[in-house]
Image 1 (tube, rainbow, N blue to C red):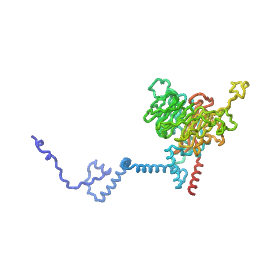
Image 2 (cartoon, rainbow, N blue to C red):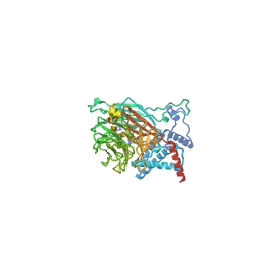
Image 3 (cartoon, helix red, strand yellow):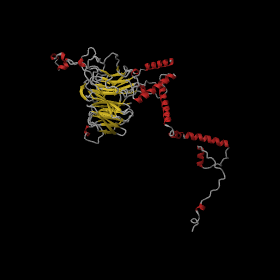
Image 4 (tube, rainbow, N blue to C red):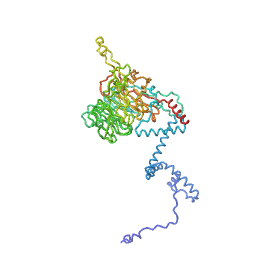
Length: 591
């Protein structure tokens, strides 16, 4: 038998010779040394180096390794930050996040300050404090921005265009894209042009010999989707089978949601307009959609007298809010989990507190400007028959989480607060009166047989579109008078003050009965507003959609109207801003 099976295991192990020398430290090799090693030893090995030479080689090789592994160090730092912060307390974490937030805010304030070339330390400190106060006010849901004095509304540049479509019913903006819906069943994606100074940036240091190309003004159509009535019986079809009448785009630019006459709420991919999901929980036409600010939670209202809540992150239906006694015409929401809706003929605005499962009811139809009493007197020369009572609340828009405005069919623009059940202030006949009918129009072509006393009094124009800049003092309204009017919230937040008309100079004493030059021909069915540049430093952009008919019916028809879109570019009062900074600087220096 072989000795392998009889010898104990301890004796079979090999014994290594004892180390006579201390193992030398392994040095990093350079590229030349690695190449020579692969080729094989061609020369005899050199004599051992001195200690100083070895240290020098270690320094050189270490620097090369640092430069080669620089990216790995950056990744390891990001991972080590989380490991370093594991043992910190809650107070230390709050302090670290606050310091990071202050650094970011200080950089943004410095960029804005460089525009006016002021380096006063006190001015910088005031601007930083103002910015911190604005951010704190936004988290609390209160008005904190005064934009009306900073914008030049009379010099707003209007851009009109139309295409072969039906009446445009709704518009939503996610810069630089706009989305529109029409009565002939189209959802269209447009790209709004940048400001002229940003369209053709100079890429070389040399001054160009040729003059720059003229700026583009007309929006470009990117994509469109049409409803398919032939698939009304197909339950697996995820698109619209009837015309969409309202549209909203998410703030992150991922989703576009439309509601239509087919009782569907369809979610699209914003980039390709491909339908993702169709919700069928509503029992009648969907009339309004609102995104909760900064999230993908939406509120939708319908003619079935309900407000429904959906979550687009999970593509799921959440709950239903009941309370209105008539069709719900519009809904709006801001940062908190609350929304405001208006019912048509029940003449109520309801403020929904979703987490608390409660609601506040605000009843309209008061004396606003429709009666001649001691508190509300009619203007001199106005026929009392022209002061129509409020019949329907059609539009609503929130200024902050406690203040909102509503528009009615009798032209009343009302300001509301959740602290009071009655309106704080009402602007009667905000868009003036329709022109009186002529005897020929009333008599059917035989004015001789008609008594002039039977001519009815002119009626006020209803408010068909209403929009605000969130957490600011600006309000925009539209009707069929061919203009978009601008309003502002007073400093005490108790009144609505008139500012003017977009693109037109107007006297402050004008009550709205004066006929303006028609820039938006037709009925303004919807408005969308967004700010140009960082925190609106390049002005404001207002998008209005017009049509020959109203968005929900044909009881008002304008033969001379146009089905299209009007884009207003509102510049900033740069001179006034500089003067304001200068005066603030002198004032702070004197103190």
